[in-house]
Amino acid sequence: MSSALVERVWGVLREVVDPELGINIVDLGLVYDVAIEDGTARVAVTMTTPACPLHAYVLEAIESVLRRKVPQIHEVDVQLVWEPPWHPDMMSPEAKRQLGWEE
Image 1 (cartoon, rainbow, N blue to C red):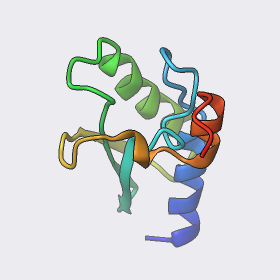
Image 2: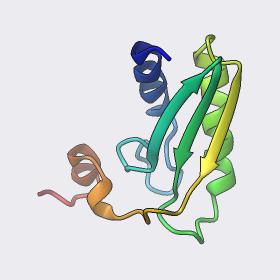
Image 3: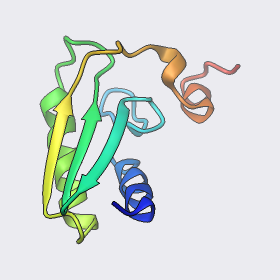
Image 4: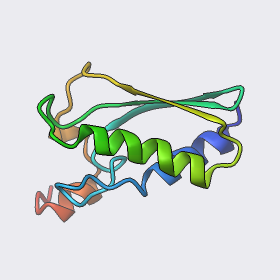
């Protein structure tokens, strides 16, 4: 697995925006891991809450953007995980700033 390809995937995932908050899922801290093996991208993500009504939208958006923007990826396996539970401390400083949660 190329570290450049993994970095590319992380960058492309920034195009997926949480529809409720209007902030990308990477800066929100929702993406826990990206691994690539034999053309398959495995992406471990969580939601801000298990009751998130738009989780299916986010998961589909991840698969769609990776298939469109990263030609080296032939399969996408998005894994929805709940451990560790998401916490606002996982957000980037930029996401906190966008929400008015300046540090």
